[in-house]
Image 1 (cartoon, helix red, strand yellow):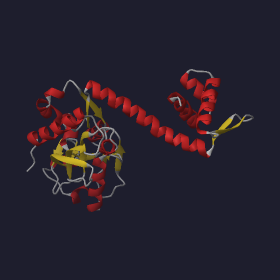
Image 2: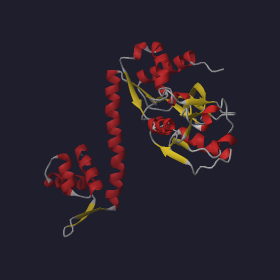
Image 3: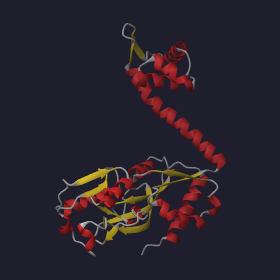
Length: 297
């Protein structure tokens, strides 16, 4: 069986069009038909049904099965190519969030000098998305944020890096700017802006508003941290964030909150990931570096 035939079939199954499939690979439609015939002979079954009057293509049950398996096969082939390339080039990977990991990485680099030439970064804006990447072995090590101090998963090693308190942030002209410390009860009618669902900050914020019975009808959601900071700077909203997300915005007022929620930053290592020996060595060195540079009591 030709692997390229599976690529053609996957595209055909997704587009349900011989024309679009041929155009996607810059080949003729008969080439797609020939590839389909080879697959049907290989598996001794029909993979599609065609209505030539409407030019529609439908998968048979066998076709649906082969399509699902082709996703796994092609993913495994691509991963194998990447792993072989990494094995030969000694590439190692580290996931991080620019707003969080970028603050801690400079302190880790001196401990990882032997790997810097091979280090490849995988960036993601959301801790939840990065956690999923570690879980599914798209990256075996990452610096992420969480709303809980300990992640209870058997497959990972968690190394704490920092605990950050959440602060209320407002513009200098905001009515809250005059206070040196605020309580949750003082914020009941405040307009807030927070990151959207899928972000750890949003989950912490939602839990905090529920605990203190704060009206959420005056809350704006955004996927961009800079948008949130701009809304705070305009005076139209207040924010509940850790200082790392606001460190580059001058002029905003940081107000401590009584009994503030906390944001937990950790290094996560997928212990069950199928990785190269060099990546495993890097992960072990990374754990040592974090323990040395960020010892939490």
